Image (tube, rainbow over all chains, first blue to last red):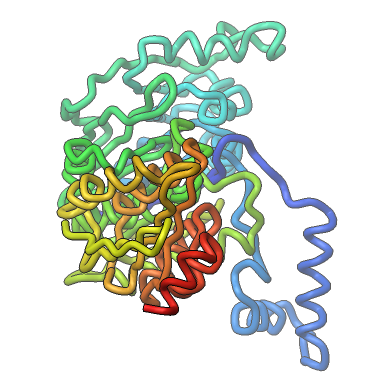
Length: 324
Length: 124
């Protein structure tokens, strides 16, 4: 765990709308490209191979952004676990917990953006929920949050009813624009524009600020709303931002579908003097090359529109860690 | 915002200048509105000469998107021409080049939208 006042953010699921997996053909295409590039090189040890991958291939050529749906962990100096959303990435996170700590006696705090399927679907596969002695608190602003969680466990959707989960599970209703102290963090939810509403969260520990803002559409001509989000992002060390669509899509055929773009994310971060923008909730149709191109384009846009302060641009991938 | 309109037969060329962002987009939208009202089948075609536009933000691009939607609904023709290199990059990154009719120059825009206007433009 990081020392007092520091935060680390771990991404367990970064894909929007629905989990995806690389196909056999995509894996083969990457291998063929990498092996062709390695032709004639001396790659006799795992270390030599790893060094080749790191030096000679770009991210999309040697790795993958991954395909689990939304789940982000905020690691504080406390023992409790803090999560944002419980998409399919929560399954991987839960297994990691079981592999590294006692199976029982753990405390989890999960802040839910909204109860759409891709944000809750990991919970039936979240193994700590099946272990007596664990305590799971699920926070959110939606009145029907508990109903959504119970519903996805009910027949005919799932074989194990919610009532059979052995952990102590509590649902805690939060109010937007109020500040709470939870698990060593100051937490403030904010209403966002999305079908059925969604909520972003601003987390602060010491002088470090992380904003989790996914499944949010922004109307650029609503200046009041734009200013409110710039204030919500104000001086953040990291803004995790829904950039599922291009700006053209978000203002045309996919208008009112509830998602945003890299362009709007950058503008808000520039207005807010945020230090880092992390592109998140990747479009499921996008392959690794497409997301890598989105990252490169957003970095270029930051360069040509920079005024006084630089915004560091990142693209989230499953397994990524950011120390603040 | 003065769009400095120039008419070439059935086509109006508008030339905004400067930055189109949160501070100016509403003025741009208001200035553009009467021309878009007439951007319809059997009426005017509109070319926006962007040679003088040094920056456009998402809110400015949204004005263009709404104008494009209006033109399509009225079966009119709207083109955007002569983007500065940085503005061209913003169009590319936001994918607006995929949904708007963008031309390298006003002349090429006129060539596509109205041969009659092009002839007048070349003669001017």
